[in-house]
Image 1 (cartoon, helix red, strand yellow):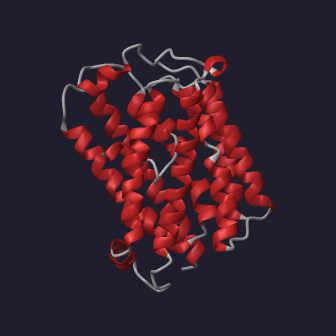
Image 2 (tube, each protein chain N blue to C red; image 1 turned 90 degrees about the horizontal axis):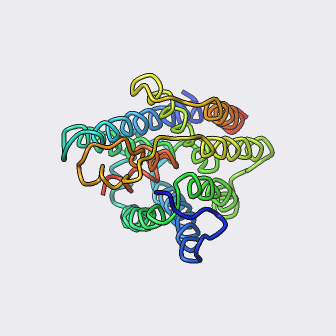
Length: 166
Length: 108
């Protein structure tokens, strides 16, 4: 996965990264919208049952699939340590759109907290890791020390897991 | 129980399932063929979807989503202590910043 760094990143990769941020954001906004249909007093199981009846929840699953395909394509062309911190921009887009669409109060502490998280993600992406040249070997079931599945998921929570489920 | 506190506890549960799920996927990826580790990993991630749905039901999205970054912390801890991966100082620094950031988002 020794692929181009920022100097020669093709336009297609930027489109893929932009798409990754957009899908991550859309997944969370749609998921939240689907859950808004749940009565406030619902238990955990009732919450799941009502959400499963929301068409938006199925849109979320379709977006997971699209994200998985898009993300694999991006990672086949650039290093994870380049792609990962860029997609952390979704922390900003989700916060901004939560304020706009759901009228959430995104006040100073929340903004500073998100800034800390962005910096933290950047530091994590800077670390050396044991990525093999043939990282795809692990996908073919061959033993490899590739970091692919682990680091794929590390990118973000919840919205990323179905990316690997599929 | 206070709704926000309940929501925050669910975030921790979801992040734990995400991190342990990732640990199993990694174990599966370094084991030959399709194996039980991958299946267990996927099961953990499906349970996480269940918890995340309730997270979104209980707290603001602008609070929940940044807190999901705690999975970086969980995965780093599990990679270090269970998989015995070498974790650099820079990575621990990143983990510290994320813990600080999520505390600001979640507590205030």
